[in-house]
Image 1 (cartoon, rainbow, N blue to C red):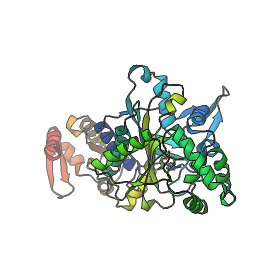
Image 2 (image 1 turned 45 degrees about the horizontal axis):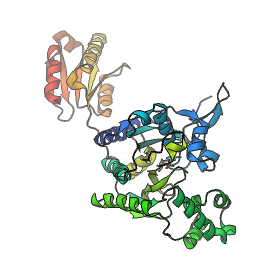
Image 3 (image 1 turned 120 degrees about the horizontal axis):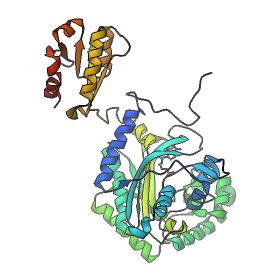
Length: 428
Ligand code: AMP
């Protein structure tokens, strides 16, 4: 019997193809660099959490909580889930570590797997990866803007072109309640033509009707509800400031009154970033402000904002925009050895090269399969080796190796004691 990965999950294999571990590493390295520039620090929370955390934070009636969480009871009969998103665990960790009592304003980033039991399709997995940020402890509109700028900077650094940022403002708790009432009124007459989910949403949380993906619901909703002025003065001022910050930085966006986000915790600014290359699952990322979540979870009244980008979708777009988006500048040095003594020498040499400070950016490898010299040279070629050291019985007796430059095909003999210096001269 052979085994396969669980439906909706995938192995991320080392190979040059789209979705390879090298590409994940490149995306992660780019992200860490940008996060550092914005002074966001990494937070790593567990992959498992108590189910009640998400019921409380995301909302009992949301799709994630009602349909999409992988949950199980542990041996102590606790209800545990694989985390479906990053914000609730980070707020939990923030409060558990008492940041709010010492140093309330914190900027975090995270990179890691999330789990949702959705129907798998292109761009929709059951285990996927998110890169996200959360700025906790500030009501400043500059933070909403910074979060959006940070997200745009990440996509730019990943060389993603043609993405679209759409922004809306849901207002404060009272504004959201007012908007819900307006929507319930505006859609009451149309209820019979809405999908079953929307019929329920209209009762429980009418805002969620706005982001129904069902085409017929969308056209009914767009007919019945055009943007209405529902923001209080404070929220209106906040939103204008956010947009002013984005304008001053030349960040392009569209206002979209239909963006509400599927999670209940959002207030004020909400946004989505989409890409036309993605087809039906066109969201690359999303986020917004969540000024009530920290207090809802037992902490003080603190403002916060964040976003999450989906790594798999970034890689889909990157692959469509050209496979060479993340150039690999790593140098590979391969030792081809023939004969027992040469192999012993190669093993010793490769391990001393691996320890050299200036060699930290290079990769060193040799043959472990008793391949012929020709096959070893083919392997070196496949690895993209810049240089190959060739050692046979002849070389062992002379105390030297042949150093071959794979680009120019030039070969020189180098004494074993000079190999490190010779490579240093060529690589540094
Ligand atoms: P959300 O937390 O739903 O706002 O998701 C943020 C981003 O994560 C989305 O824009 C997608 O890029 C990505 N994402 C969400 N769900 C999935 C999924 N099931 N498979 C792959 N990527 C996903």
